[in-house]
Image (cartoon, rainbow over all chains, first blue to last red):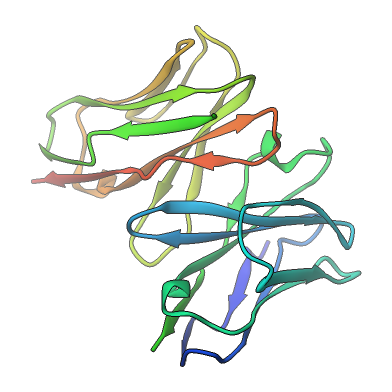
Length: 117
Length: 109
């Protein structure tokens, strides 16, 4: 069974630009969560999608958005990039059977390393 | 405020030298506590879930325990391949997983 796939693996952007990251969950998984990982803050929850609906959202500005498609694939978008957005962005999928991804083990992709210059 | 703190930040062990990693937490209502392992350049990999105080889980050289205020990840006779960053994550009533900043473990032969 293929794991969680994130593309691209690396991305370099300049301030003010926007970026779209993609995540393909494990087949059959309906919940997709996104996390930002930085050396100082660790993993910070961005948002979670389940059956194309945003189920939960972390404390990030509105520049961070996401969506989920009918095949459970998900994208996240960051507009008007700032230097502080440089981070590893991780996507995680879970089965979604319990109705709460925080009760289930998460399967993470290898992430997209975003550098903002 | 729900919070999780991991210690130490970094740990260097000789192969075979057993030790413990700590994850202390304050939470309004705990649904579960998770341990993950993260290798450089990869996403975290699930290890254990603990749900109630007194619970223990084991996998190879790793054993996770849980009390009302903290969780320990005990590593017995570690090998160099156990080198990684170990993360604990809290599942509170708010439905937002809260991760600690991790313990970076290095095991030398």
